[in-house]
Length: 82
Image 1: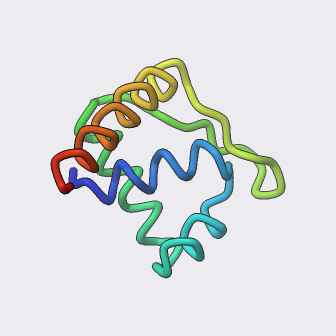
Image 2 (image 1 turned 120 degrees about the horizontal axis):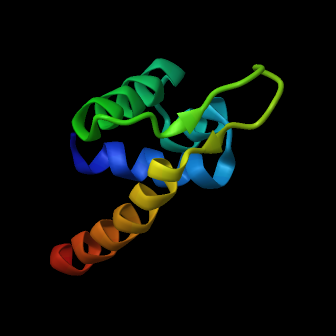
């Protein structure tokens, strides 16, 4: 897991679309997918419900909990960088 994984995750929770997040960060869609898989492996839990490709993704309960913590971590990371 790295800080970019958390950035991608937070953006994905808002955008609900892997392709848009990849475009926003100028990376490939597989990069976003790999980041989510790393987070799921690190926390031992499914974070997203990936349904039909034409439907938006949704967060699991664990995913919602991680989102709260990820926002805090990113907030403190930005403060530390300053």
